[in-house]
Length: 338
Image (cartoon, rainbow, N blue to C red; front, side, top):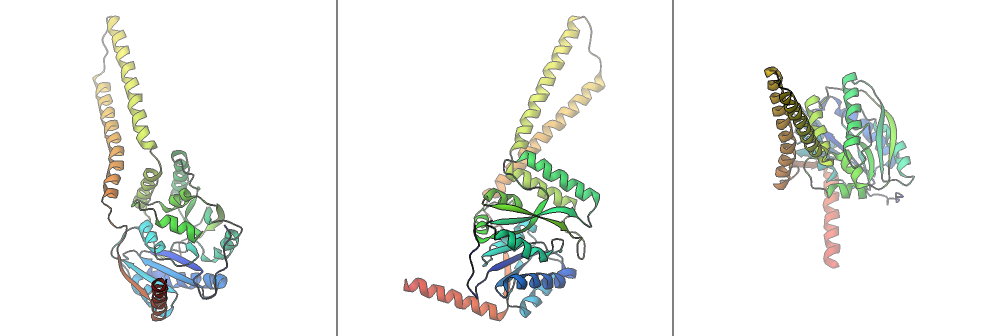
């Protein structure tokens, strides 16, 4: 898709960033993102910061920035919904023709907006950042991330690019399709891959975290991995069936062996081995029930149709708020006249 030329004065770019306990790095984040957006779009951009129930002074800093700059939109969620739903909330508020997504920790350099924009204008709808190096991360995290993406590639039908996060530049039509997906357990990089259109990688080196500590400990990484697998694959359910067949065959083989020993006039010894087999079978049954329970629980939660996120407050600079109200009134007048 060729990116059309946006008329002067309209919003050409929306930058969406979820924020959770990023007080220490917010000023640097706003400064660098603003510089990158202005260098490529002049004043025709908006900067959407979504506060995901931060416990520090992140929301106060975001509000202060919105009071200074009419291009900054401050969104405060009613509670902590998690990174993927906070990002979803920001994507539901975009007005730009293009949407640039990155994290608040500055590991994904905002200065890459220009080169990614040039790549997009070659006729693509999504340019996603693909990490060739991950500076400042432990060997354990790099290793588990590499293993996860390669295992995920074997499990799912939709091809999800390896070594990628949510750092990407997208056209508006991709975002509209993404917003139309109502599922709660969201793995956004997978959903974008599922949408299709023309998508290309942009190799880059990921920087160390600018300030503070990671908001993605092992527990959250495991939860995201489970969301990814259960959202795009039924292989675990098939694995449960295959495991049952395997142990059934093993049981028949054991029964045949016992029968053969009995016909020979012998007796199969080994109370300890029998107890071990019972424990193994019990654990396998619980594992299979857990897999089915994970899918069933997600179906139960999806069936409630609760809102994905709840916005407590949206703040804009008075100039931006007045301009938006005027635009809405003009649009309403056009509809009435029509």
